[in-house]
Image (cartoon, rainbow, N blue to C red; front, top):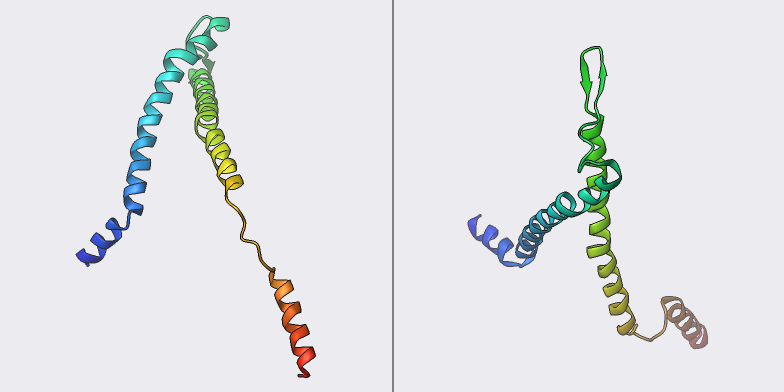
Length: 126
């Protein structure tokens, strides 16, 4: 059982996953710092505060922290935009370039092969 686990780890997929997780954690810290230190203060310029946490609705002694939710939504949208522009879009461009350089193998399609076999059988008298 231990040998099977070692073989599983040694295949390389676990290493790729571990590297992806570590890079994801580092990227999360980077994007969080970007959102909190750069983007949210820019969002605060028209509103006068770096977050919307001060927006509170009070109903019958209950405080509804709507501003905290709005801040989380804005942060999420900024993180999603950063992930899209820094990871997804470059990756898709890379895949498109890689797809253009690879040549499709030329040869008959499955239908053409079946037609050729049918015609060959018909001409041989079977």
